Length: 205
Image (cartoon, rainbow, N blue to C red; front, side, top):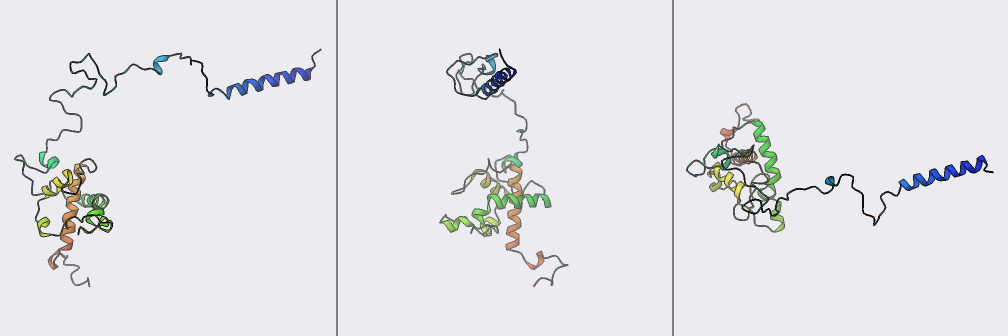
């Protein structure tokens, strides 16, 4: 005769087995898994660099339709995006309007991307010089003081000598903002008394 105690123990043991079996669902198994919907695991798709005999060029990747431009890449303003005019000559003036926000942005980007080599004041004595790297030219040299804004844009974009190009790291608008800040540095290191506001003349010692 089965006692209530024995029945209770059996029920408890079965419950423990059920719970325990649920804890081992992730254990390794050599059995082939059952896929209710196999398309979720094995999707039919074309890989970007894969071959495809359907197309004449034998490639999965398709070229953009002729005459089309992806959104955000319409660059009608040649001077803004290249620093050159229609004749391919470097432009003299920065096409980005100078505002305090632009200047602050230029300072921020300059300190991040430029100051390690050119220093915070643009004299070419950045921290890299302490580690034996060739110092870059000073922005305060006469040659660079009279250089066009287009020249600076071209150098930031494409690099020059030991300087790598920054076209991928620094967006176009930030390059022009940096150039505004470089001009401010040049002016600050070559300032005259006439550059000091009249209301502060005589107050600075």
